[in-house]
Length: 98
Image (cartoon, rainbow, N blue to C red; front, side, top):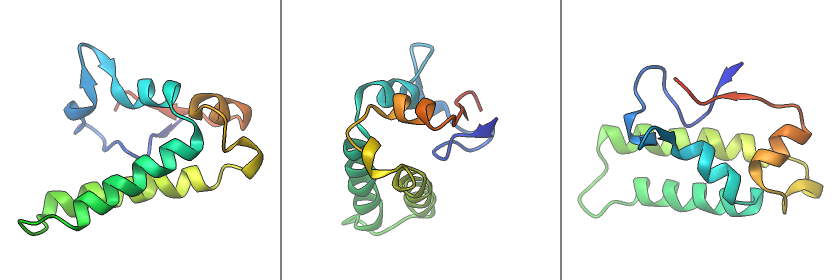
C-alpha cells in the first residue's frame, strides 16, 4: 500500500489528534471537488506567507501539491463523490499510518 501523499514517513504528528488520523476523517467528509479546493487554498497559504516562506512552508506546499495531483487524476464523473468513496471506487488504497 502506498503512503498517502500528505504524509512523510515517521513525521506526521500534526495529522493525528485524539488517536484519529485527520486526513482519513477529512476524506470521509469532503467531496473530491471540495478536497481540490482545500489543497489549492493550502498551497496558496504556504506559498504566500506575509512573513516570507520558510523551508517548512515549501515542504508543506509540495505535499499539498502532490495530494492535489492525485485528486485531479480522479475522473470527472466522481468529482462530486466523497473522497474515500472515490478512492474505493478506483481501487486505490492509501497508508494513513506512517
